[in-house]
Length: 266
Length: 275
Image 1 (cartoon, rainbow over the protein chains, first blue to last red):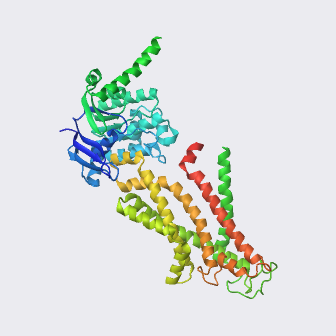
Image 2 (tube, chains in turn yellow, purple):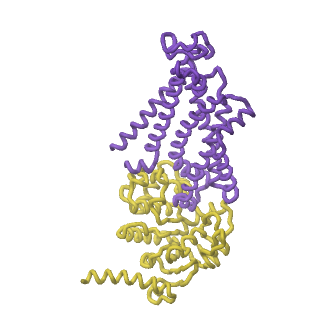
Image 3 (spheres, chains in turn orange, red):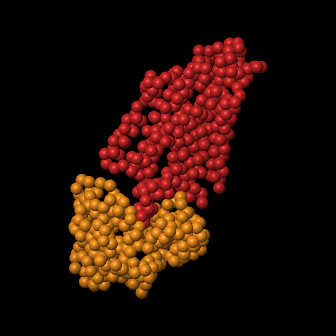
């Protein structure tokens, strides 16, 4: 059974504008899929729809099955159960991903206590372990810190630790590195890659950056204006892009790279 | 560093001002220099021995009236703010969570209530019940509920739009837990500051209503009624009007300073700047 099975997913605004148009995608357990497209192409909306988290007023038709449960049209109660068990999400903006008024440790403790029933000293140890696992230095100190007291990269690692604490079968990463410094970005991608591999977790990686997607996923789906324009193996798509938009995407990534080569050889 | 000293200064001055009047109010619960209806002092005696601030035109001790007035001011402020917080808070959270027509209807209702003059509302309530402090507080509290509800609605909506709420929902946290754990703590600082400001406004509104005879009936002296009674004799015996006027201003300034100081100590953004 697929961990995620989306068929003919269509998302409309209240006034009938189509934001995502008959999108279909399927992910086997443990598979990684990159969802790539420019901003406004509907990739983030797709991830929200898959979790039943779309903003009020938007209507969804079609089908989205998460670990065998139909999400489209499901009640809030059903959704709460599915979300905690089967999927977790890491967002783009580390500033808003954590509650500014709650200590980091408590925020991680929340899913840990709910998912594994831990309490007291055991819970504390699990929190520190979760922070260590995302390679944060001084996990004790960070557990006691407020989000504004740690750096953006650290916050993003905390957000990742929170998502992993739920032990989801599917991790949705919505541009998790876009807001980070380039050097931190690369570390973060490595970390995500290793942790997900260790756990055999399926990953839906959303990004507008082909190079970033290529690093963590095997397969990509290219979206433009709410439609899937191309889907396939990452290397193949980079080598022989078929659609105009994909070509442009690959071309621009190449140009950036060659600009770097030119300068370094000069 | 410099900023934070200035901030605590604001809070301290506010606490001292409001605190002095609070002491007057508290003491008036147990002891008063004269009984509220004691008219043995002679008319308009002016400050002097036996009567600290003198007497009014009926021979009642002014300081005694000031003390009862302080108590009434605090009762009016606290009562109105409690109504506003309870009713306004509940309506605001409901409106934030409700979708579509429920939210629209609630918001429209709140807008109408805000546009409705408090004075008219007070007159209606007084007509339906009677001219008591309770009626005045009810009118002020209802009017303020609308303001608080609108604020709470927008605050809650803003918090609900944050990624950490979506993340919590994704990880299966239930709504009651999200509200208690994330939403309330995050709207709390702004809400507390606003309620402190509402307290000051309620004190002023009560003085206004009792000036018009829509507040606590005699012999309970409210500052507003003291002002009204002293109006005719203001040129010959100014103490009767000055004393309640000054206390009213001091209390409102004090409460506003407290609100200001609270904003700086509670607001997470300000705290972040200092950290």
